[in-house]
Amino acid sequence: MGLVSISNNESYMIMKTIRLFGVALLTVLMSVCFSACSSSDDDDNGGGGSEVTASIEGTWYLKSENWGGETKTYEDYSDKRIWVITKSGSNLILNEKKTSDSGKEYTLETVGNNEYKKGNDKFVIKTLTSKMMEVGYYDNFYIDDESSKESGIYTFMR
Image (cartoon, rainbow, N blue to C red; front, side):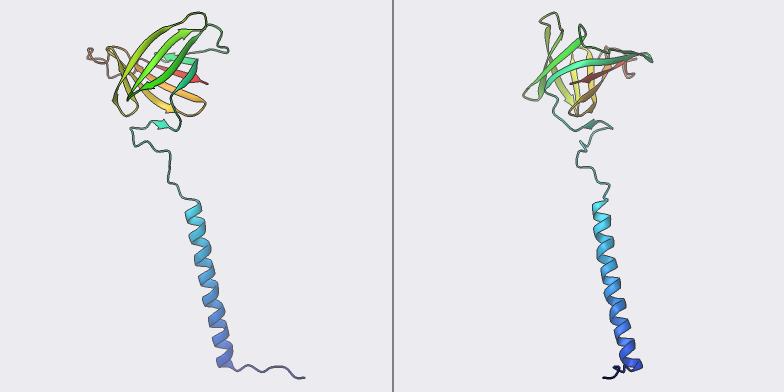
């Protein structure tokens, strides 16, 4: 039994085939990697910076509020503001209460993407996940020249 002899031409063809196979394998691996690491966001709501990834309906407990740069945080929900939200067509029904009373019911009229109106006030849902909701509040938005500034921010938890 002897060794198999390969000519230079056959050796060149084998190396060329191995190189072609290697390049093809590398191309497949790179395309899988780039598609798996895509930065596309399926939760994009198409609206001005708001992140909405869950349903707004349900019971929300006030965790903190920020007015003029001063934040007040609540550790418990014993007698704080509670929002119970349901949908009615494109509008929201908001039952705002404390744990000790039955509350007041308001209709929030839809005026834009994640934007709602109650009288002259405007509410903007800035962030909404399954556990947290951040709401920007604009006092007298529809009658006051200074209304373009956010009056306060509420943060609610479930």
